[in-house]
Length: 346
Image (tube, rainbow, N blue to C red; front, side):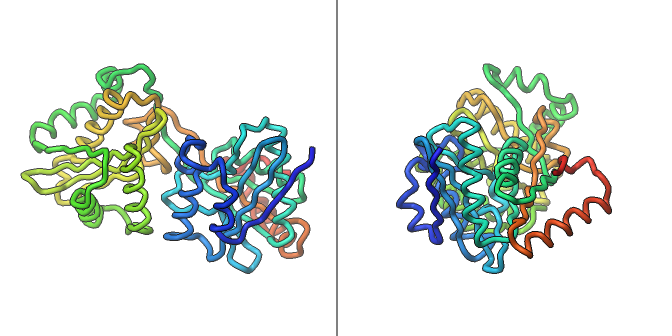
């Protein structure tokens, strides 16, 4: 199989060749060119874009990276990226996908010593590791986070809710009567609602945002597409809770949620979640709800399926620095023993 490969050092050049990475072609928000471009603009993991493409048999494989100029590259991702992996066009078979990624590994191996990729599903980590090993890279996948989801296909909210833990249902019932939380869920962007979201987030237990402008830009774009679900909860007219979701292609993704610490006694987060879940299930008719990354205990009350997410570390065994890095990583694994979080190595 003949494979053509290219490296792009800026987004403008890559965009000119990025047919098949638009909203219409990529079901996942995190696989679209605009997502990577927004990440590079607002919260890049390293200063210089390094975008690799390989094509064969009518299919493309893309790997979006950012490099630091010293031989290290990272996934072009941020803490807003709930998943990362290679992006394909043309629906290649597994054999072709692996061959395309091996071609990418060989090409970028001329300039890099190491790469870190996260957060990756097990399937993506396995695929990339297999392909890069063929091109003389070492690959180590370590579980570093997880993703909670629930399949609600053909369920009503009442059916979904009846399966939630009794304590959660009781809390929502009691606090709902006490709080009188007035909830608005927008499917379009409004400046006033966004100002409420930012004020609530700033007054919550959540850490400082990586980039408010990144998130606003995303919300504006998804609002134009009709995929935004921005929930604001108010008590006596005062905004106290907010959640940011997107709904597309039958999947609801929970991106952000926060409430003011001063309103904690009313459990506004639980009340907001119940309303957002009801909207997604009964109105939007989604089949899957995705709670993003993280193993927060409260997610288990709302979800039922946990999947690990991995950081894949790659070392180039064709460079001295890559060999040293691989040896140090191996020594570190041996000193820690075979922990449950490590995938088998070779």
